[in-house]
Image (cartoon, rainbow, N blue to C red; front, side, top):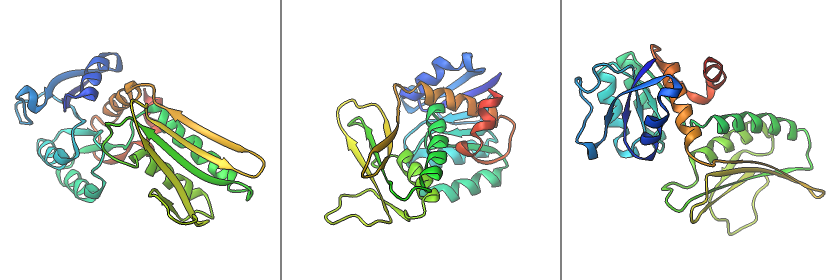
Length: 247
């Protein structure tokens, strides 16, 4: 059983605690400023893996502290991509293992695979144009979502006539090589991501709707079991098949 520390006790941290045992993980410690607890040699003494779901502002500090204590990390926080190379160097310097994702949801990572395959197929049919849409509740702090950016990368990689994504408002005709990917923030909308293929004759849409955060929590716990004892800097989506087969 993997012994974990939960870093950040918000909604995700609480859900990870709730689902830990049934996913072969034991919560050893919970670290959050509201609980007057902090990252230290003592607090992480019996920990195999730290699962970090905090705000972006403290990610670099947390990674540095945890790495120096030689503990492996599941990084669930988003909004730190501009610091990716710094974090990679910290991980490699301290000879630990870290696995990150913009989205740890098992369903979403299956969705990534579906979009990867479908865009390769649709690229063979010139009659269809591709577009994207993501929708979230009005408390989400970033736009577009990190998941939308990954979906855009998949589409552009597989589509010859799309070279870059356009997320902003357009006061002009969109260019053929631009992938238009819109964002909506309102009310309590669950996380929704959609890729559409449109032609004169018809429209094909492939959609993922997150009903709750359980898929994210389960994915993070599976990632913790997988990264235990490993060294290196890993992208969840690149080792997804291996992780879910391991269980």
